Length: 158
Image (cartoon, rainbow, N blue to C red):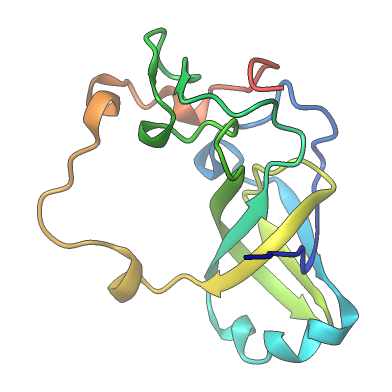
């Protein structure tokens, strides 16, 4: 299996520390997704959506760890029960507000991604497809006070 970057993500965040840890904490932070020019045709009709799912490579994350201490809890958790970047495949996911599509560029809001991050894929966010029905459990985060909106990153995953 081989996966290649299809573009680059531009954001105001140059350093790993002091950036939002989730899009909800990045309200008003503008960014741009720049696809390779030969892929611009694939952006046709994306502008009709209000939000997009962005998949990217945590290119500056440190070595993969199966147990991590996440930003929102002092207790260790399995990496697959967190959003930590030090994952075996280092794949990140963010749901961003789409502002505009122009040629091979997508302007977005609420970006929580490091500048220069390799882009893997873009998909439209569709609530009917992407929001599960029924009772939602959030595991160890249920005791969290929703501090993800104010929490900033540090270098623990570098």
